[in-house]
Image (cartoon, rainbow, N blue to C red; front, side, top):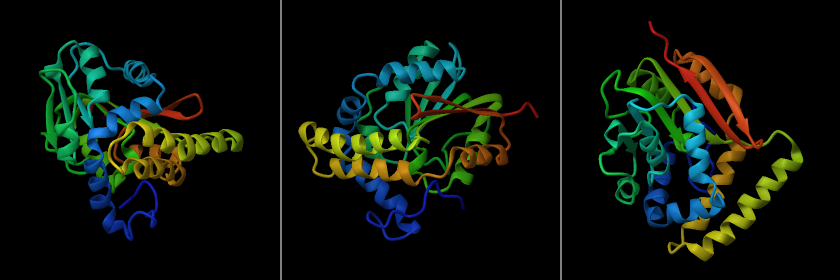
Length: 245
């Protein structure tokens, strides 16, 4: 088992408690989630997601699986790029998140985890995950599932927030995520757990394993052409391809 970070004991006691705690807090805050995340991104979230998907290789006519679909922010951009919402499937472990998802008519939404996707082998040309990798329990199982669900020559595109390498940039991001974002959240959120979720966000960013370890995990699962592209020193775009054989 390869977790994305050690247990964060201020939130849950053991690794075995992780999934239930994460699923619970995301379910309780689902109604506020999109509003808060949009405010946190200062209005740039949709543009950046679409840009990252196109840079990762998503093209019109491709079949897409969005893992950790949440309220549908990545799925909406994927549907716009493919030109047909019926080509997009979103999967999330939280029924509440799926219930609050805002996606175009035609997008299929399913309940399931990254470690056990409810999809057949070779389903997708393109599999993406937007800012959810830090919240799963087992990276090894997830990468195996991503590999299984992709078609040969299919593309994996994982978007994630990464702790900056330079100490000043890291301090600035921490101040924003632990100070400004929880304050902003109190102003726009209705549910009292939302500030805690935003604090948890930073703690997972700070504790997450290194980009090189994530990329090694992708390679171990069988992916080739594994690469990482960084925007603004914070936003990592991991790209990989399932080989033909």
